[in-house]
Amino acid sequence: MRQPALDLVIAALEMIREGSDRAPRASRAALARLGTGDPVAFSLVAASDLSEGMSAKGRRLQARDKIASLSAIRERVRACTKCSHLARSRTQTVFGVGNPDADLMFIGEAPGVDEDQQGEPFVGRAGQLLTRIIKAMNFAREDVYIANILKCRPDTPAGSFGNRPPTPTEMQTCRPYLVEQIDIIQPRVLVALGAVAVEGLLGTRATMRDLRGRWHTYNSIPLMITYHPAYLLRNQAPSEKRKVWEDMLQVLERLQQPISERQRNYFL
Ligand code: URA
Image (cartoon, rainbow, N blue to C red; front, side, top):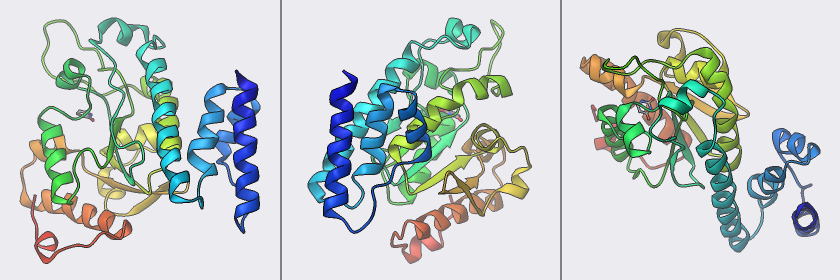
C-alpha cells in the first residue's frame, strides 16, 4: 500500500522539478511524518505542498487530495478515546466543517452542547453570531473552514448547565488533530477566537487585550486573534463588537478581498 503512494509522490515531485523554475517544497511537519512511514504523510505531502505552481487541473486534484486526507483524520478522530472521560461523555466527535481548500480558517475552543448534539462546530448561539460575522465579510460558511482545538465537548457534572473550558491536558492531547487539519488545508489566514483557542494553538497564555487586533503567525501562516463570539454575547457593548469587526477588516485586507464603504462602516 505504501509503495504506490510513495511512487505517486515521487512522480509528482519530478513533475514539479521539470515543469517549474523552483525546487519542490514540502512542509517540515509533512517531511517529518514521511520519515516515520505514516501513510497519511504521503497524502499530506501530495495535498499541501507538491502542487503549488501546478496547472489549474493540478490544483483541482490538490483539493480532492485534501478531502481524502481530511476524511482519514476524521475517521481517526471519530474513533479516538485518548481522553477516556470525554469519549464516554460525548454524543459524537465534532471534527470541522467547510471548504477543505479554504483561504480562511477559524479556530474555536471546543464543542458546546449544541455542537455535541449536531456534530458540527459553531451551530449554537455563539456559532450563529460567527456565521453573521462570516456573512458580513461576504463569505458563506461553506467558503471558509471552521474547527476547534478540542473535538469532544468537555464533560460537565450530570444535571449541570452550560459548558466548561477545556483543560490544558485535554488541549495538548487533541491539538495534533488540529495541526494536521491546518497542514492539509493550508489556509492563507487563520483566525483564533478567544484566549483559550490561542493557548491551545500557540501554547501562549495572555490577555485578549494584549493579543487581539494584530498579526501573529502559526507555522508561517498569518494568524489574527480576536474575541470569541461568546464574549460578544456576554458583553454587548458596541465598542467590543466594533473591535472584532476591525480585526475582520484586517483579515479581508490580508486576503486582498475588496471592502465596500458599507463594510468599512459596519458594526456587528
Ligand atoms: N464555541 C467554540 O469555541 N466552538 C464551538 O464549536 C462552539 C462554541
